[in-house]
Amino acid sequence: MSKWICTICGYEYDPEVGDPDNGIEPGTAFEDLPEDWVCPLCGAGKEDFEKVE
Image 1 (cartoon, rainbow, N blue to C red):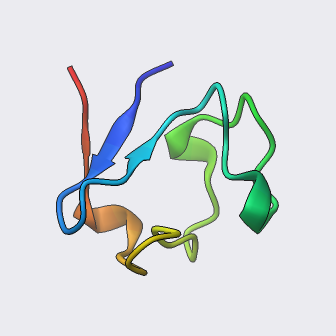
Image 2 (cartoon, one colour):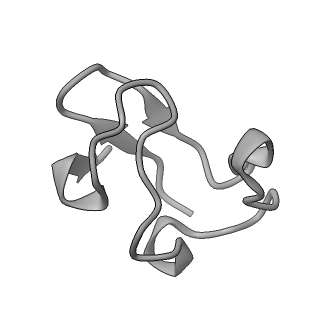
């Protein structure tokens, strides 16, 4: 699974880790995050993330 980075603050979403502080289980692909999920650091929406190649 690919990692995704917030273009606003640089937060990296790692699907292996998830976002447990916000109820996202490890192993959750970025594409499977709820549409209303936001960056835990700056509050940016999913549209502000870019896939890390």
